[in-house]
Length: 225
Image (cartoon, rainbow, N blue to C red; front, side, top):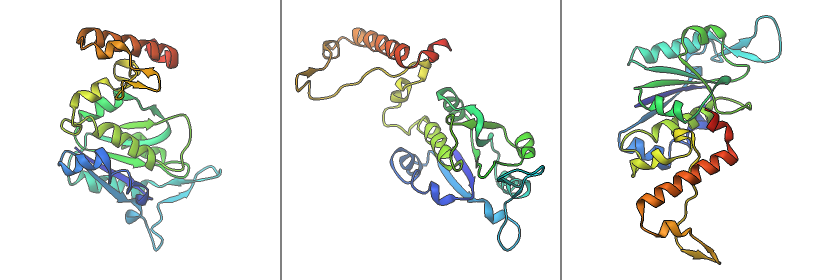
């Protein structure tokens, strides 16, 4: 999978893709992430990519021409299955969205800034719009990194134990059950006996019950779905 990210602040994305699982995926050749400076497609001496909004009002709007020129330049090189736009009014991104995107091929992610991008781009060039929460960030870069991480870790071969992703929170609309490791007894606080029993069936049942109870207590809205 290849992800191309369009932004006016590429330096914000240097760290997230240089470490841990994302770096491992790149080193294995399972995923590529390329960050593109939108200002390279801007006009004039100052490489302008934004302008005042029609109708007045505070805040600048990202212009059509630089964004479309960048998108189309990328599309001339390869076929993309999705063009994503990070925006507070997009669909709330969830695990099912990550699962679906992980099954696609290459994708483009556009990072919004200022008051957002010209609506005409959203109407005619964007295929998916996502938000990572009900709050506003300074730009879409952190959201793009979050979505890239959520998608890339699902690709076959990225995780050392591929079954791990299947038991993450939000798979099957449930939160993950509690987990324990050594020591068995820490200051009088003991690991549940069932986890020490070696009875796989009983352990699986305990985990299912714990996942359901935790979801019911902390995120009952997930059970409604």
